[in-house]
Image (cartoon, rainbow, N blue to C red; front, side, top):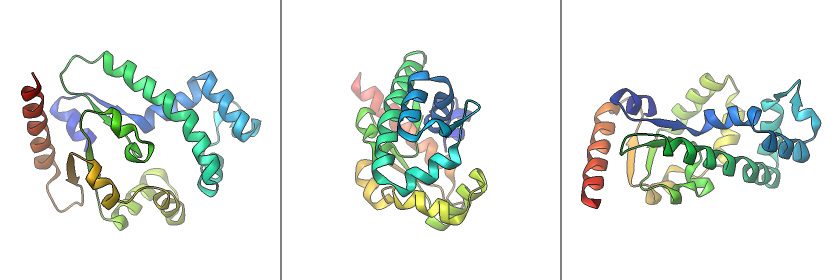
Length: 182
């Protein structure tokens, strides 16, 4: 959906992609992760993402501590990025926006839903990971049913319902909402 929004002409901040970059660029973040996970979490200056994932998905407290390091840095990066954008609408794509509570900082929120089986297949393909690893990630996230009451828009990305029409409708509604606030 985010790519569709970009093609339509609106800026999108990709939280996960920026987080991956910040994990290598932000020295305070690197030092914090090393303090939590040990020197071996970076090999030749490169984060061992497989090792980190296996450890944080097995230990909820460790996952919470890692998230408490990463999320404020990403939020600050988003704020900086957002302040540089020219348009009246900017979008923040984030996998765990609701779980982290970051949705409360947004003016409006969209939830992208998809059947779990399809989601698992997509993540396996995208990240080259096993079904078991994807299911472990999903297990620590809120369900779509838990997120729906927190969302202002729900977009269904199930390869059946047309995605572009749903995104265009959401953007039109956003423009109307924005106009009514002026």
